Length: 290
Image (cartoon, rainbow, N blue to C red; front, side):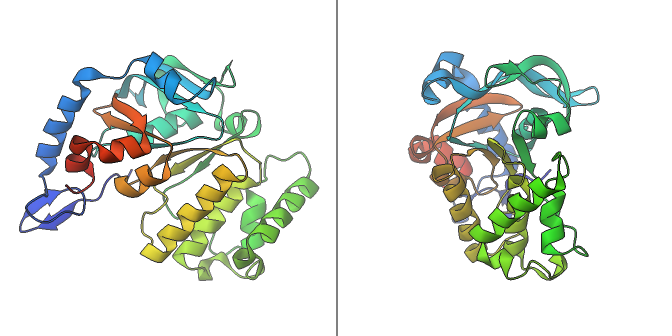
């Protein structure tokens, strides 16, 4: 699972986009990030940030892979139509939170609720069809030998009728002319940005309430990164989607998101409005390049 990029400068490994004088070693970031966790936000603070009743909430989550515990007693709240970006050092458990919400991990304790209903033990198919949660993988997940249209229709495999998936795909083509022009072409010929657009669009076929977006900018050229965030902004602000994302470019993620959570060693260290965390000097020093 990819996390924040490691920058190599004069033999120093670190985070962010600052000069060599501001680049911290990975060990420095991990050690200093631990200090942020000394005053962890209480659930009441998280309730306030989501501005009303949470659409999705997590209480006391303990989760990992097999017997390995990665997430320790974590709480999370996100309101309907909000966006939340998870940031933190490598190995903090950011992607594991998304995996836990969607059902990819071993949940040892805690409760995940969607619209007040306990969805902790639902299967991934049930999370998508019944709970309205879709997962957009960080890796290239298109089927290159299938057409763009066939890829889209794969997103509707849980629909009761194929006609429903076809109708949803047509709505996507109406919205995104870039995909409409290539609907009969093999997905393997798409640019990196077009593939990411296809991955996002495929997740929309089931009309989810929540999009779990893992590293939307990874591997993309800057012009495509801007395009992807414009698409996510449209989905949130014009279609009312709730977005929970992990983003390697912490600055870009916090600029986009309503809320930011800082994860350290599988625990929530800080939480606040995205723009507030952008102005926090310690967050800037550790994760935003100085």
